[in-house]
Length: 482
Image (cartoon, rainbow, N blue to C red; front, side):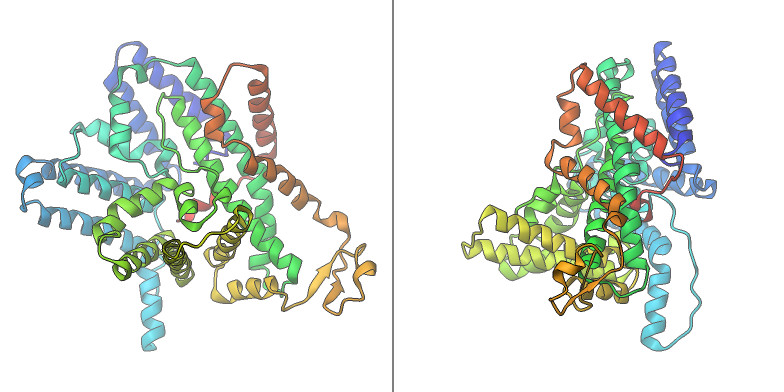
């Protein structure tokens, strides 16, 4: 079930909201939590009911392991380590089976000249997200950091529908106390208003900005034809904007949905395209994934404690894992390698005392991120190289027909044969995106919410335009594929 669908907005969400507060109104707090769990499982099963037993089995097994690991002797001694290792291995193997089986078979075939049949296993929704989430829970249970043993709260922690499908990757310490908090059971007009505002902004981002950029990026990446300079840059920048507004729109809608139930999800974006270096970018982009990679991969590897070479290796391995987590393909691995290498280079630059003017630091960071996204988006190496060749001008510079007469003296310029107005939708999306990139983030607007006409007008305009646009197209969120 998609957030940007009529059945979610007009049926599922109102019914879940009404049932939750109706049960709480009769003093049935446990039943209300059970209602949210049941609604979340139904939400998950809407895509494919066959995978409901998978997520239920996963949460039952991990809950049992977590309870066992949080026992005093296991937490303070060595006896819990084999159990922890088994729990992590089980989660990783489950993820590898569904996500990487065909990737492994394909590489074996290519390396050994075999023709082993691919299994064509369908990746269950949210597997990457709830796997990381539960691995973190097991590790913290072994460390003695968990204080929650209630199965119903744990089931909601794993399945809570606003964050289930594509994050944020939530942490038990920030979520489970909220489920048990008495004031979460009382309807809050302020939280409802803030939730509606966030959801409306997210819907606008998704269906009017991200999906418009998506048309342009898909045509460039998947079209197969050689791209001229401006067309190639338009393709890469379109995906850069599409990915940001698609994922940040999802997070806004998730946070907005959760606020209706008085639940605050963690922030996942903080104006990442304003970053002045690559380290700053990862503090701002997909913040909950960055937190997981740092706390449960980079630090256990040794972090920055083992000297320069060890630190560089730890950074690289962390981002190779992060790249592979995003998708079963060498382009994703290479994207992770690029970011790992950039972080190593940034660390060396800082140790050498290097500095850049703010404008140059921003341009270098944004330019690198945009180029790296090409490998993240491309289906094949050939597609990525085709776009990059166009971006460096290998195929010349094609300009709009009305501009060509003024530039035809340049040997590398040629007439695209396209009138200037042909790019209307692209420029409308670009003009809509720029204010959102330089304006306050959605969570900042929600934090500063006041019941004013201005906020009501903003929420209403975003909601009306978003709902109207959904009549013509409804597309999945990009992170559904990861």
